[in-house]
Image (cartoon, rainbow, N blue to C red; front, side, top):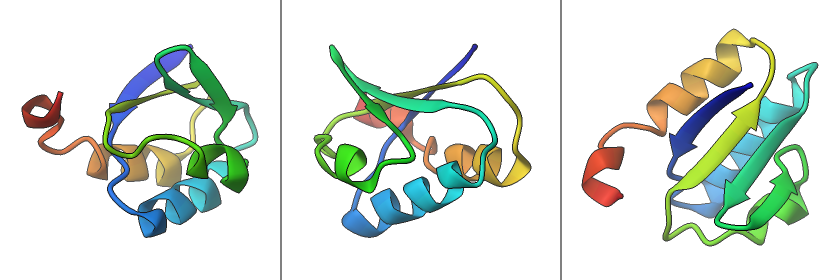
Length: 80
């Protein structure tokens, strides 16, 4: 199981996150404290609080997904 911290800063980021996650052939979950949603669900992701750092958990590999996560981890230490 892999775990990464990301920051979605806009509705557009959330839409792109779901779009990339749906291309993964493995489960992707998005966590915020005790709330867990399916990262392939636009309704679930839109319910998350974008003001906070979110945790992504997944078990698989997808280059496009990893690139998206890397791009949304930049400067996360300053936010957390």
